[in-house]
Image 1 (cartoon, rainbow, N blue to C red):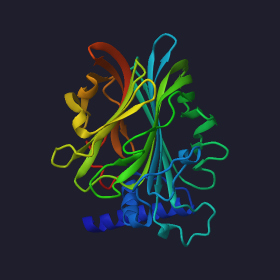
Image 2: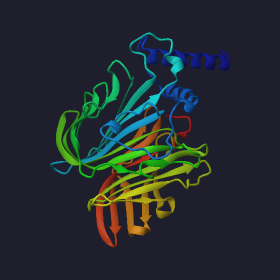
Image 3: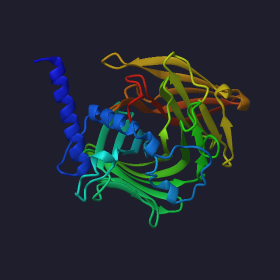
Image 4: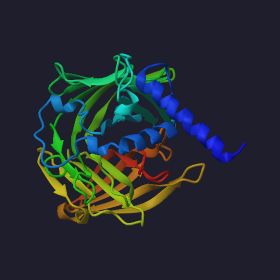
Length: 387
């Protein structure tokens, strides 16, 4: 059969699948190709959405919730936890919201119709057994299947995966499959941390190529993890990011390296560097230091240096950085960052590496340790035209 004809059939099937999941006419599953197509559709309507321009006056719990006037949004939780015997676990639970062109729902009379798609990624790293368990879910943002609420406090859910705010600084988290589950309570100890300029994080020179970005960088965490037929009481620390906007990367940017660092001296550090097609690093790469007392200091691209010390390759020859040395001269800090295990790749609707890391640091010559998470995108595929 003619290849062009096959391609036409394939594209038609994708369009039909998207129509069904948005309008609610029948169940449908989305593949990576569908997600890319959805993104292409929403990209054509960027001008119909607000862009991250200027200062936003955040109010909580309202701004913990969804901002549908912006195209893209995510709520990102990671943590490093320990059982009573010292066994280490890492976890990631991320909810994504993506607006879809209204043309798919305008003609639908179904109560299930929605122009909002939610997907969630969940992973647990069991360091002792060298296992990384990965799961995902997707749904339309209607009929109670997925969404957020801020009445009376914040909650977000996708089917049976959910985070519920119990009090001003306490959150309950539940996610999992039949074999791997987490049930955790997170208590924020530092409050909301704003990145960039009062929460406006510029990613490119074009006005509006930015996001609103805030975090909870040290959340005391207790609860239980189940893996296959074992259950563990765990405790440790989690990190939350909430970010939203309508366009972020510039046309010459392909991905980013992002670091969340929690040191034992109660200091946290967020860093990201945006990588360009020509191999360079964007001048809009930046970071934030959060001191023990909650004070913050913004880092510009020239305030830190990230060196890749080692790499790791997947079975299909995708190469990711795998060890880093970071220097932040203005606070006399040197960091050595190493994954707790190599294979923490998230090969789902879009492909990236997201993993727990161990940290050795020297601050003014004093040795400090810590844990964190690293996110690497744009190595298996450019993030242009992807979620």
